[in-house]
Image (cartoon, rainbow, N blue to C red; front, side, top):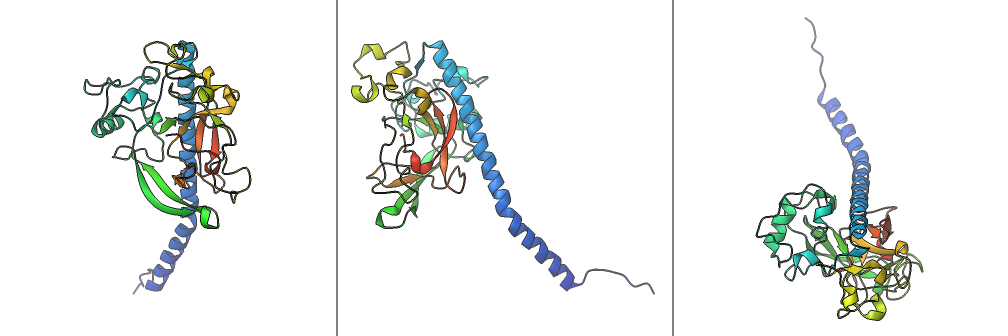
Length: 293
């Protein structure tokens, strides 16, 4: 009689063990490739938004729309979410329903509706694209960045689909020191690598070159502010204008917080993508940039 050939139980277990070993070796590499692809996709989003910013300025004598606190949607949605004043420059978009009026205050349920159904994908960071809830901050526990008592920061994560790309509320110059003492990464860390541009009219005149009661700072129906008003310290090509809020960003002392620790990783350290005043895009390490709003 002819003998039937087949695997023994031992052989089958050996094959399974080899496959499991290969998977354990390959998974970290695949995960890293996936993270790098998301980082590059986020950078492509920034380039597209930077091009929109330049087109807006070209049509409005170099002015940009007034933007305030990203989370102050209960005041005026159009001055909180960057995608709204740029909407007509964002290509084909679905018409907003009557209950989503950009110049009116929005509740969080309206933000969620807008984010899920009307917000173009390139305003959403790939690290949170596909999430079902609206963009919110959530405590994520302490993280140790440096040795010693001052090296622990409270981590917060931004989660949910929404306008990922934010503007700064307060001006901060280059080398603004936000780390108590010397940073363990070196003397160039814990300080702003670049200065930043702010998009509102309520700053101190000496800081921004424009105060809220100056009519020269107002232009047209959007109460716009000329970006040149904020270039009194450095060229706008060396000052940041927009950043991805889902990347790693350190906050200023005394809050001792870090946002999205480890996100947008490059070279084993987290950071975020930034659009500069002249529309070019760079990645900035999280230990060299502070939060905007």
